[in-house]
Image 1 (cartoon, one colour):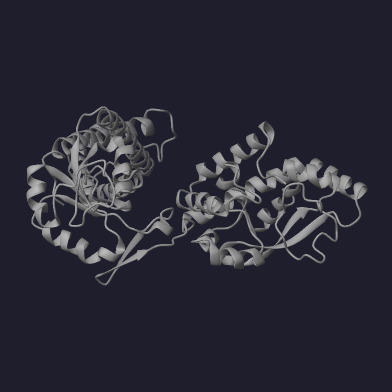
Image 2 (cartoon, rainbow, N blue to C red; image 1 turned 90 degrees about the horizontal axis):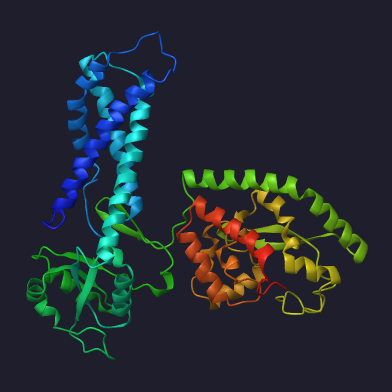
Length: 467
């Protein structure tokens, strides 16, 4: 990794404070373990001097560990997740090195609980300090300090979107100086086109460019390759902006295998521990909801029985994870013969097929409560893209770009599209856009936020397209 001179002060800042945090965590772990009344093992308390004697080794091993996991790769486009993962790897490696080194030296200072406290405190301290540092630096950059210059290769739609994106992310402190391209722009540019691609090395040097963004359409791959080759002798950060408009809401992932790089365009966020967390949340919260809403379920069931003929529950085939179908439960809100002669059709405003009670149930979403049992069984999730009927899925997959990407996760009782008003017979393109945003940005806190917004939406205001 090449560390530019502009990044060196920040690297030194992080190194110094990482050492400070590590030393504080090492000493604090001893004090917490042995000076707070936690019961001792075999009534043996190692002397504090042994803890102090280990400090030089801990400092050296921390610098080695943090360097090996690339914790000091400092650049403006580094994501929070990358830094958190690097910190976790660095602290884990440090803990293993300290324990193995002490074991090899037969050093008498040993405490598994103290080591656990040290690892946890070091990780939290490093992450918190770095987030605070980046927050302060981001505010300074947004105010005009610590700026770097960027050049965008291209003049089309993708280039303009790249410039707007950098402008909105002012916390990065990357200013777009100009565009460069061999082709003349098709319309007026907000920044000048300062030269052809062959002049890039000169332009980079004269304008003190630190970042070059290649924002060319896919049909100009040869030009993108030529730009990269032209700048290969320059110490400038070069990045390609993916021209994949249909997949802008999805994360691109890369995997290296035997020297080959594979780019993933459709990756579900539910893998590994995420699957366990998501399912545990669904099981726990759906079970609690079933108990809490059992009186409401009983009252609605009795009201349906008394006000209309036919069954209380309505089972309908819907598509969920990987497009597999399941039988979704709802309280019946329409007449028994609602689709006789018409076949499957979307609901509409003032739908004449609804029962008197059905209009109220659909407007308040009470007809969806039986889906808690679908969630508990594992057919659905509490939060996710709303499930659709197979007949409509087969229609939409042909007309809505990237529609099937919604099925990379389980469908949900509520979702990001629904709390933003895109439900029922509304714009399918908008619903897909919000669903893909949810899939890309999923985390447990996002689910809890959507659940809270769902409750507030049901209680606070009339919902659009709730019919």
